[in-house]
Length: 236
Image (cartoon, rainbow, N blue to C red; front, side):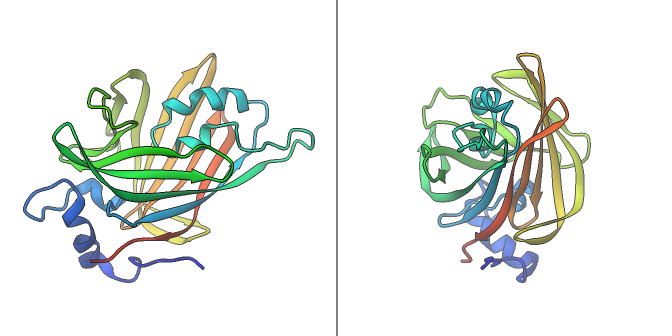
């Protein structure tokens, strides 16, 4: 059963949910916060599919370069190579708590998929957007998953890889996934190349909900995707 705690509550309740944990001050709601609500006990569950057996090795090597839901780019999903069929799995991302890193509070996000290693990343909203850390080490450079201004054409790169380009390509989009139909979606594309392969990821963030769909492409072919199937967002 899909849990849609915020979908019927309107923007006033969205503000109430994220104001205390968005990294702003005095109850300020930062623009990126509506696209990825951060609060302890929030969770999102995704149906993950790996379509392309041939690129599975490349996907594994790309894992460290994938800014969010990095487990998509991981060939450890049991690819049915003998039958050449898509491999499927279920991934859950949950906000387990918060921790202070380099003098600021970060939310701890835990990604779990059966039969695979658990991955922990750290998230924080600030005036520039949604910041992410891959580890809690103070010298580990954070990067932005969503960046201000939230408008078509906004472009940025990862601090450790200037060839990895992220760009907002759409706002106010509508998209239907297993968890439901969502309006006011933000669409962000990521592009780079890896060992001669052109790589692109396309991501949709729904206002008041979070990431609802992400897809990996190699040389123009869909290699893998994660689609939101259910979620739960705490209401204060």
